[in-house]
Every structure is written in structure tokens, then in C-alpha cells.
Length: 412
Image 1 (cartoon, rainbow, N blue to C red):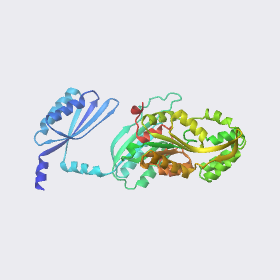
Image 2 (image 1 turned 90 degrees about the vertical axis):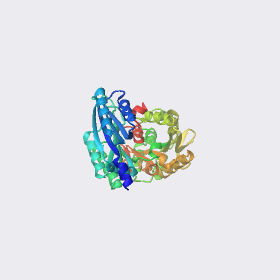
Image 3 (image 1 turned 60 degrees about the vertical axis):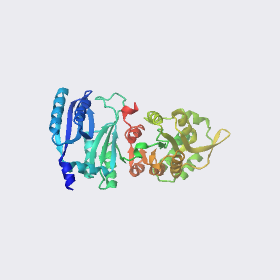
Image 4 (image 1 turned 45 degrees about the vertical axis):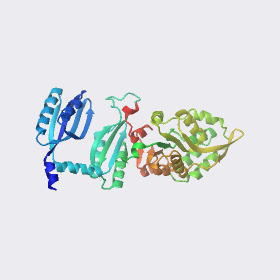
């Protein structure tokens, strides 16, 4: 014990903070001085906002030479035109800080067309109330314009890295979702573990997720039964009636429709904002992607060919003499089947289920969202949004990229 105290008394720990206009060579010049005196760097970090930088360096040196090191650092910072401050750190305080490394790390992602100071303050207050400490804050989106261009679709995303164990995880999650819903932004709370950093499979619902319509409604309009089918569709999406029952009833109403209308509908599908950008990035990053839909294979395959999805599982309409019979072929892809397919694809691709993401909007997507490592309710019905732990309601599908942790500067 006395030996440890003796060693500790021979050590000085100094926190050095450098601020000023960013310019090349600042970090190099200052760390070269530390290297000259054989100081050990215990921690280092840098942040830049509008060409103004802040660098933090925590270093350890032997008692007796810290004064000379600080003098040389002060001379160099004056020469570089930056400000420098020194704060001594006790060995006890350092060891307490090191001890916090065993605690969990969480990533909290805020996303919206814009984020206000009030939005960030509310989330920060929740973080503090849970006894968590913010280690870092990073902006994932590009810098927003001062004046939004007409027809523009700006977005802003800020990511908090926090450390600690929440006092009450369920309450924390619930409060974040309530704040985001009330204030009009999206939020994601994820444990920052190896799985979050290595997502590999993303499975999507199709209707009202990848496309801004329900294809069965489009078919029904051509068949002259649009109002009847829409009423059944809405009831199913709200979870009021069983999906299998609703699907069978809607298919029956399409009896006699000429199959030629499917090509015309497919070529005019309203694609959801951000889908093309999202798919381009996911393909480049090596993700596997799948469409798991309660809709129809014809339209899923159209999107697969156009945007490069790897898998499509949906429902097959029966056709006789060029017309729909009002029946379907094979097993219905309902909520339970979607979850099964997600697991099967992950197994086939040798992907841990924790590395999967599911995105959907309806009640029949809930089993899939619950099975995935990250389940995202996208512009979802109230029941779905209330149940899901993550949701995107303010921007397009490329919001999924930010929940994964992609930064605009990487994407572009």
C-alpha cells in the first residue's frame, strides 16, 4: 500500500484545454512537446464548430517536470494563436474516472427537420435525471442553411454518447418517446455495443413504408371497390381485425380485375422520400436488404429490380385467363410470417439477430420490429408507434441511416 502511495506521489496528471480558430498543425505541435518530455497521453479529444476548435489532452508526467512542459506548451500556443489552460487532476479523481469505464454506453439520436434548443434541453434533462453522463455530442447531418430553399427538405441529426446505467430504462425510453412525439422530432435510444456497430441486415415493409400507398388500394380503385377495400385496410393497420381475415376479404373484392393494370400501377408507385438515397448507401456499405410485405410479389419484385433489394417475400395473387381470381397462392405473409422470415434470412446469411434492423408502419409489422435487433416504426399508426422503442415520423427513409450511425460527410 505504501509502495502505491509512493508511486502516486511521483506522478502529476494535467488536463490541458486548447481553444481557438482551427488550423493545420496545432495538434502536431503540442503533442510533439509532450513527446519530447516523454509524457504519457491518457486521453485526447477534439471538436470543431464553425472553424473554432477545442482540444482536450489529459497527460501524465513525473513530478518536477510538469512546470517545464506547461511553459513550453504555453509558448507554443501563443505562437500558434490559440488559448491554453491547465488543470491538475488528482490520482484519486483519475482512478474514479477510469472506474466508470465498466459502465454501459448508450447512443441517443435526435432527428428532425430541425432541432431547437428546447428539444436538446429536454433530452439533456432526461439524461441527467437518469444519472447518465454525456461523453460526446456529434452532429451527423450537414450544416443547415439559414434560409430554407423553397421545396427544400432539410434535416438535422444530433447524436449523444452517454455513459452509465439508467436508473429506470423503461421510464427513460418512455419519456424520450413522449417528448419527441410532443415536440415534433424523432429519437432513438440504443445500447452502444458490438451489435449496434455491426448491423448487417435491414428488412422493410413495403406498403406505406417503401412506397407512399397501399398497393391493394390502388388495385381496388381500378376494380371499382376502392372504398370497401380501404375501410378493411385501415381497420387491419389499426389492429382492429386479424390480418389474414382482412387480406382474404380484400383479395375477394379484386376478382375479375385485368392483370395488365399491375404494370401501370408499378411504374407509377409513389416512392417514399429518402428511399433511393438510403438504398444506395446500404448497398455500398455491404448491407443485405429484404422486402417482407403483406402486399404483393409483383410490386416487391419491381422495387427489387429497380433499387437493388436482395430478397422479396410477399403474397402471390392467383391469375386465370389474364384476370385476378380473387384468391391468393401459397402462405399469407402476415405479421408472424414476417418475423419468421427475418430470422430465416439472418440465419441463411450467418447474421446474428441482434445485427438486424426492421422497418415498418402497421400493426402486422410489430412482430418483425420486436424480433429485430433494432425495430423502427416508420410514419407509423398510433398503436405501432406507442409499442415500438424507436420511431421515425419527421423525415424520410434515409433517417434509418442516422439511427445506424452514418454521418452525412461519410455518406456523400
